[in-house]
Image (cartoon, rainbow, N blue to C red; front, side):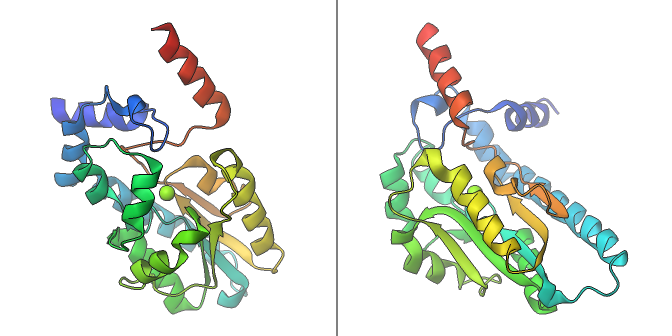
Length: 233
Ligand SMILES: [Mg+2]
């Protein structure tokens, strides 16, 4: 019971800038391992996906005439469709973004099954699926190869960040992609991801922020405040 509570608190309070080492140094890595290996993370994800399906079905019941080809679902990739836990665990949760990119280039991330199944459900129904990731263009071939190993193996478009798109530009990059999809005349019925920028499309019928017990990408204001806090301690 104590362990479960501690993990839940970790899920709620863990703040770390993705890919930075020092922000992670005080986190109990055993708790992150337990969250993954004892199935708590998978349980939370499955619960979120089930809730999303219920919400989407409720909305669809009120839209009897909408056609699948006029609907869109937008999926993030890492810690949403693909699981980078194997890399993080191997690196003892401390790594650089370059090391992460090198690993992603191997195309060996595992699937996050409930989200893969959700994506396949949309694909089978004829709903347009879009993938919107923080990965850079240089990883396109490896990312596509990795994705095609699992259920979410086709899509209308895979949005990847241009090479000159920095971490501080992720929010605008994602908003621009949401705008482009909306301009195609498709109703965005779902956006799902593990970071807050993934769910910025406020007009999506259902928005799902999945738990991520391993890292959070801070917005600039929070990141600077966190850096100040570290300096003062
Ligand atoms: Mg992600």
